[in-house]
Picture (cartoon, rainbow, N blue to C red):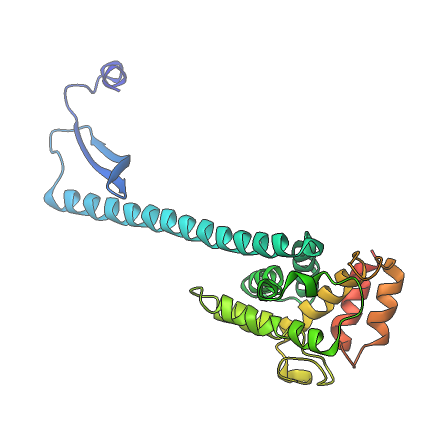
Length: 254
């Protein structure tokens, strides 16, 4: 820099004013001002530069903090998904597919980015409560007994209990909790009906049902795509919200 000033003929008559940009106490940059006259900088100039350096430092500190929070959030979700996949081999990849289908449907409804993110997270974790269900019941090759089915029906309650323990997961927990509520009120665990069921939960229900039907399970082979779509259509207004099924069928036919 000095050599450049010398070539410009300004080496002897200039004043520099600088302030560090800091993130978590570490200097990561520098704001530097130069004036090429003999007057130098006023006290106000120094105060203003210090003020702007502090603003920039705060901005980058907040960004670093936000990035760390986002990574921690993603790590928690990934760990929980891995936990249920270890517990139940038939769910491997299921959560990711349900997330994709759910988010695609939400996008078609024009939902906000924040809401789509909540739906995606709830979709990933909708079955985390199955950690509390025995492997023998989860992977039973034959038909479940009434008692066994009643145990399976507890998993949304377990899901809510687990997710509510995580900071800022209240909305996600409530969405996941209601993904087995049926449109006609015959679902569980609360027996909600129609608009009583969170719309986000109704989206996940359709995505979950479609992926369950088109995936191989311990008790049956995977269905063909057209078979699964026919069942979704058959149960419109019963198990599923008709408007969501219409959008889902258009997407899943592709």
